[in-house]
Length: 481
Figure 1: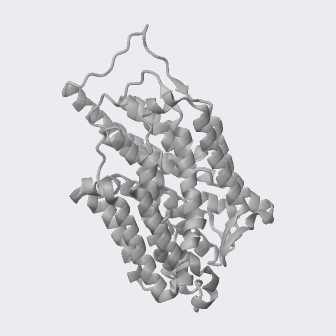
Figure 2 (figure 1 turned 180 degrees about the vertical axis):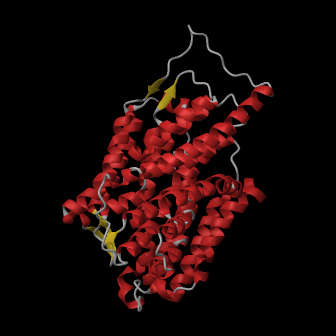
Figure 3 (figure 1 turned 90 degrees about the vertical axis):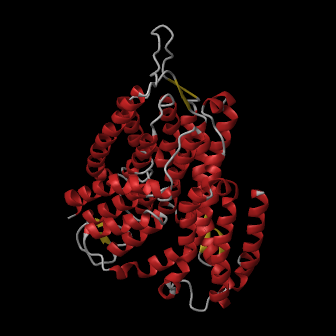
């Protein structure tokens, strides 16, 4: 059913847009450069409805949603694409669709797929007992890993071990929620490998190791969130014990040592990380790699991106070929999580086209002049939109504001505190919602596959507003005032 649906969606898209590439110039009278400046906000309705479906449908029609969510994706996508083509020309619609699918979604989903495959072939074996102290340690390790193998890589690598360790417990939602806060988001702030917005900054002239300056902000967040987590998890742990839950006890003679199975897959993780770095370095050092396959004017799949995709897919293929099925079985590996992300995010990427066009055209009109304003505006928008273009919009806004002191970039000079605010907003506040960062959804799906009933979209917002927002206010007071 899903294959037929996406074949049908692809056919409609082809008829409406891709076949019209040859008449782009004729149909785009005003040009896409000024399109965002004239678009009314009503074009964002399909995107808002898409988000409402993700938030509400699992609550009111959960079983139907699980089986038929692809229809919502197709419906809202077409309810944006068809009117957009009618009002602004098939060529303009085709160009925008190609740009988001080739320029954004393709590398996004290939990266997630490759990391999902490779991490699924690594299993942490041994007798681990989920206690508050062990959980804090695992969260800390995962957070520190995020900056070096990416938030997605660290999330996929660490989520299954922490679920296994806490299998005996009943109350464990808080473990997964804080995992998303720290490992899937905040931990990615120290290098351009950690989160795509920082890679975008690196590609525009920010020094690779500049983001290490964000360590002091990350440490403050770590201390606050791990302290709150330890309190909540200790309370839940004591209730589990009081309810009669038996903590596993292992005999010293029979206790299995902790070890990695499929450890050779770390090589493939390094391949994927190397491919991401290479895609940023090659166009800067060798401009020829910025060229590539031209789909239409303004939409090019660069040779650097093609090399990145080939390396990542090769890593995923070699990982499966060289790893025993027993390792995946031990991980309860299924394709459900990556399938859900691929389905939902294709709709999110398509329907948020007008929101990004408007933001790019009018972002400079917001009148942002203070680091705190950049921090909160970048962050709140990154909670619902793709944080990479959001980062780039405000990075460009700051760089073009005429500052003479700060970090010299390809776009202009950006004061260091401004760049810190934009970077932290884009990376940290992706944790505010399930759709703020792709690993959030994948972690939730894997947790639910393993029997952990996760909060709804709105329920998760309650967690983030209660815990993350006060933490970000502290960040503002300490670093961005």
